[in-house]
Picture 1 (cartoon, helix red, strand yellow):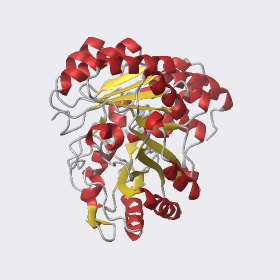
Picture 2 (cartoon, each protein chain N blue to C red):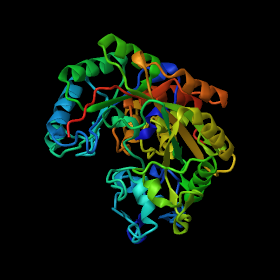
Picture 3 (tube, rainbow over the protein chains, first blue to last red):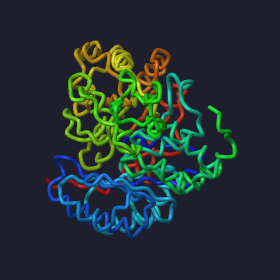
Picture 4 (cartoon, each protein chain N blue to C red):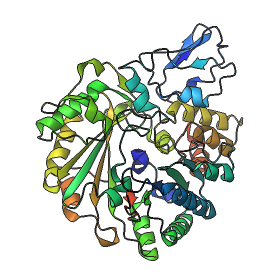
Length: 216
Length: 241
């Protein structure tokens, strides 16, 4: 899950992409964390994430799972939550609710540093630590093109295949699926629930005309 | 992972789901190249095989092949850490655990990312380079730590070296004034590995998310830049156990 800081894309695109984690710490606040995490998930739902997954169920928002099933599953200590928001305002709303709830569980946000800094100042939060991405090194010539990586790096575990992205682009271009349907196909392998299908739809709309079926 | 040939109807639906392109046709049937497969289970989880021909490899739980699954399948719980995935909680709960406190910088080297995968030989090239640079302590809660045969040299256990993983993370912690040296080492070893790696640098921040200038200066001095997006611990956690 560390990989969320390496999400690639233009600033305009990343402004519509904020990942939020809820993370109890083993040996520090695991015990008694289940009702607190459950409460925080209730608050997240109110803020309107565009995707979410809880480790107790491992099913993302588009798997057909109902909110009550997700909440009901949070019974074990140490449940972790992965979510993503498609705009600054929703992220801010979520953080305001979480701050007011004061449950004491660690909250991480992956997103544009300047935006997160502003939001934190606006709602009176002092972040503790930053994890900076210093880029990709080594055999970068073996990587898929950067525009394909804008899709694949949205999965925290790296299991969204570049070949699937290419296949979906082909299907969008052929009119077999819409951009939204294509985004949900790409999102499905992402077991961590931080694939942003709204951003992905925009990317498909933007990239599909640039590709011929046989490119790459 | 394997595809049962007697069941496969050769529709090819599973092919694009494999992050490493290990599924191909042999005749009119799909097969998975066992050398390339990372045992990430993505094909089984997501590709909706119409005849349920995809299954786990018979030896997926055998050591050392089991490493592929522990590091590559996000739903597999790693025996060394007790959590799913390839890493630790690193910055995610640092406001509670106080890991990597003031004066320190955490460095994580995410090998095989994004989505390229790698051989454990590549991991060893990096652990050796780090050891030569004088850092002999890999984060003990990271599964890589249990794979080190000799901390002084950075050598991994030899029986593992033939394995391939979708990704692994080497996590270390250094004093801030050591950051430049480590970044220089990583720049040099980047020319030796046959895969890619992403570098993370994590540090405690000041008020208003102020990133310590000496950390940024070390990054700049070695010719690195940082992305405009980052992972930020919001400082809302507290310990009660």
